Image (tube, rainbow over all chains, first blue to last red; front, side, top):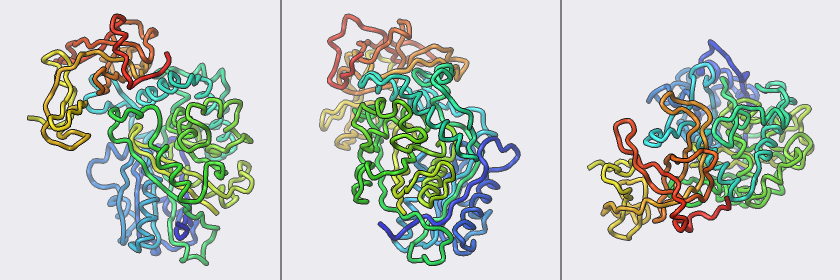
Amino acid sequence: MNQVAIAGIGHTAFGRLEGTSALELEAQAARLAVQDAGFEPRKIDGLITDPGPAQGVLQGIEPHYLRLGRALGLDPAFAGTEILGGASSVGGIQRAAMAIEAGLCSTCLCVYGDTALSSTGSFAYGRGDEAAFGFFGAAGLHALAAQRHMALYGTRPEALAEVAIAARAHAARAPHAQLRTPLDMAGYFASRMLAEPLRRADCCLVSDGAAAVVVCATDAAGDFRHRPARILGMGQAHSLGTYSNPTHFDTLPAARCGPAALARAGLTAADVDVAMLYDCFTIVVLMQLEAYGFCARGESGDFVANGRIGPGGALAVNPSGGLLAEGYGGGMLHVIEAVRQLRGAAGTRQIVDAEVALVTGHGLGMNSHATLILGR
Amino acid sequence: MSREPRIPSAASSPLEAAACNACGHLFLPIGPVCPRCWSGNVGTRPLSGLGEVATFTVYRQRYRADFPPPYVVALIALREGPRMISNIIDCPPESVRVGMAVRVRHEARGGRLLPLFAPAADAAEATTAHNGGPT
């Protein structure tokens, strides 16, 4: 699949952006991404949107793509809103790529935006009847996976800490990151316990901000401002049976779609130069390292020890800091950092000769996973 | 009757699961069709109420006024196969372990009878093939 690429990237500031609507932020990110591609807005004939956790819940039934498309004055050939939770940004780019390959559109704008930090106080909603047991929030759900991992494999809390510490060390080199103060082991263990074994430091940030990319056919090339990041492979897998799936907390659906997507691109985990792993919680990074084959199942704790996924480590995981430190960008900031790295435009955090980038999305609890493999 | 997935009816203890009359599959939550063979011929069957902790978390953060921490949310692997979310009660949260044998104990909460689980040291043989974690 070498005919589709990401030609433009753009994002707003991330953090607390009081007084700015999500729609304003999304329009700003869209303008930046289209400018970055060197395109005129009228060239956009596709629109896929991801309204983020707060807008997705709060803004009712009017579809997000309709609101944003109206604001941008678009009458595209192809449009929609992707609803896969944290897998929506990657899933949306997949949908754009498929539409372009099928000839439904040629230049698709994919936008994430939300004002999750300034517009709502809590994401600790219960899931249906499970709220009757006090089972609230995504942290509690992922704590079940973390506890299971510890019981099955002897994984220690220090492994979770390594993921959080690495994210903060990476973010210190990303000028736009929301949380750039360093974290050490003592700081991690001083972090407030939320749902054992997960602490505040294991959780992603909550952010206001928007991020966008332009996906297009590479045969429209020639007039790209930057070297496009080609889509080499992609995949999705879901565990919709949830608890009735006996491996639901033992592994991620990524174990099915990850290696398959890499294989379709003629690659393995060993070929990945930059791993942009969806990191809503530290445990999800550990489980993805196993699912994608960076290490064997149960061995992610050893894999991340001693800063091996931090700056200068054996594997560059989320060099911009990810959801844990760069900001909650729904996954679109992960895509953007992958493109920057492949362009050689990542400044002081540039991974030398980065040729292959893996970008993942993980959504709706442990239910859905999406994989995108980008190359130069 | 309601075909929406729901907490197993606890009004009539013991705990029960959905049972497919076509293929025999037992499942939770109760739903409109058998998730294995898609038959709509689904009834219910009482369970032993025994199981083990597949995984758990101790909530330390207060999310709601009516759920003061600490309390334990667990995924229970029932002896007959189905798995369900519930609470572990009647023991210190620090004593809960993956693989621990538990037995259902219904409790009234919020105007309904909920299936909660308490340690069942006498039922260690409840351990099923659905779990295998060292503790």
